[in-house]
Image 1 (cartoon, rainbow, N blue to C red):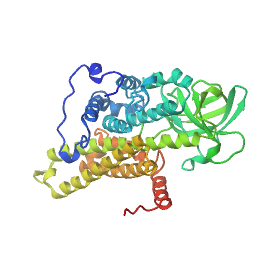
Image 2 (cartoon, rainbow, N blue to C red):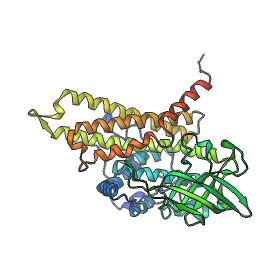
Image 3 (cartoon, rainbow, N blue to C red):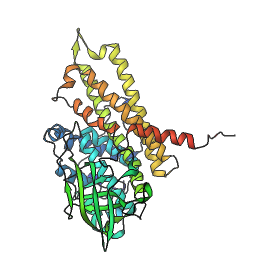
Length: 413
C-alpha cells in the first residue's frame, strides 16, 4: 500500500476478513491483495464512522466535519494525488474501490468526499508548486474543504457557455458572475472556479480556472438549497461581485480551464458511479436479509420465485455495473484514448442500473421501504441525483455516440 500512514497503525487492530457475500455479489472479485486490504479498511471505516450516523446527518442536513477529519487521517482526502504534497499516491481504481465502500456508509458524505478529491487532483495536476505547498496538505487532511464550480444558473450541460468573467487588473483578477448547485458551498474554504477571460472570446477556449478562497472580498453565498437527497452536504449558489483574486491563484494556463474541467469530470464520473455501486450493494444486502426473515402466506419472502428471479436480475445489474466502472478507472489510470467514452459509459450504465437495483430492493421491503426508519429510502434519494450531475446521462449518450461516429471501425486482419 502507498497510503501516507500505514492503515493498521491508524486503526490499531486486525482487519477482519469479510466472506458474508455470495460469490456473484462479492465486491472483491478480480481485485489483488493490495486492493482488497484497502477495500476492507474503507468498508470498516464506513461501517463504524458513517453508517450509524447517516440518517442523523440526512435529517439535520449537516456535513460531519469530525468524520471527514478522520477520513483525512486515513488518506482519503487526496487519494490519487502525489505524496510529495500530502496525497496518498494511489490509483483511480483504488479510489473507485474506496468510494464504493464509503457510500455503503453514507452516499451523500461519500459523494462529497469524491468531489473534494477531484479538486485535490486538479490542484495536484495543474496547480503551481507555490499553490500546492500552500494548500495541498490542508486539503488532503480535510482541514480545509473544497468545492468544484463549473455549473451556472444558465449553463448546465452546455458548460462552454459559462458567463462568469475575470478581468485582469494589476496583480489581481476581478471576477463577476455566479455558480449554481455547488456542493459544499458555505462550508468549503477553497473553490475551484471556471471563469471566462473578459475579452469577449466565446466558447471553451476563453475559459480558465481560479482558486477562490472563502472570505475574499466580493464573494458571497445564497441560501442553502433544500434537496431531495445529498442532504449531508450543503448546496448553494455562489455570487462574485468585483471579487478580487490574486493572479497567483490561477490553476493551469489561460484558455485551458475547460480542458481541466472536463478532465476532472472524467474522474468525477467514475467516482460518482462508484458511489452508486455502494448504495446498490448495501441495498441488496438489506433486501436479502429482509427476504430471509419476512413471512407472508406462511413462508419467507425468499421462497417466492418472483423474488428469487428479481434478485438475480438486480445482482446482474450490480455486477455488470461494477465491472464497467472498474474498467473505466483502469482506462483513466492508463490515460487511454478511449477514457472519455469509457468514463461516460460507466457513469451511464452504473447510475441508471444501480438506481434500478436500489428501487427494486426497496420494493421488496413493501411499505417498510417507504419509511424513514429504514435506510433503503435514503439510498434511493441520495443516488437519484447521480443520473444528473457530473454530466447528465443524456449527455453521456452524446459523448458515447460521438466517439462511435467519429472513429474508424477497427477490423483485424
